[in-house]
Image (cartoon, rainbow, N blue to C red; front, side):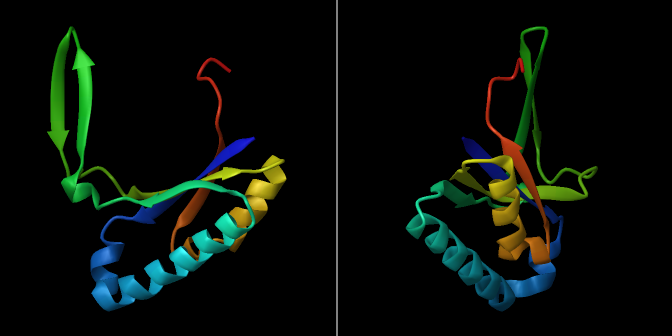
Length: 117
């Protein structure tokens, strides 16, 4: 069953870490992804750019409105994801606990399925 690990990180954390520190944690995440791929569990993974470059789109009455980031009300942002193929929810949770990002961010485990269930 597919599960997604969503990495929720504090807004501004990347800037306080700096480029050198960012490269260190990014390398750890790449190693984690390589291990998951070697084990046949990884379907996809990506790091997301900062919300400074994001946009939110909402349609009301047939009119789209766009709000460009950064989003003042946000305390966290989704910094990336891992899409896994796990046998059970417990397996996905165990993998999330091994994710290096769990040391500096929150790793949310979500099963994939239709929105009506």
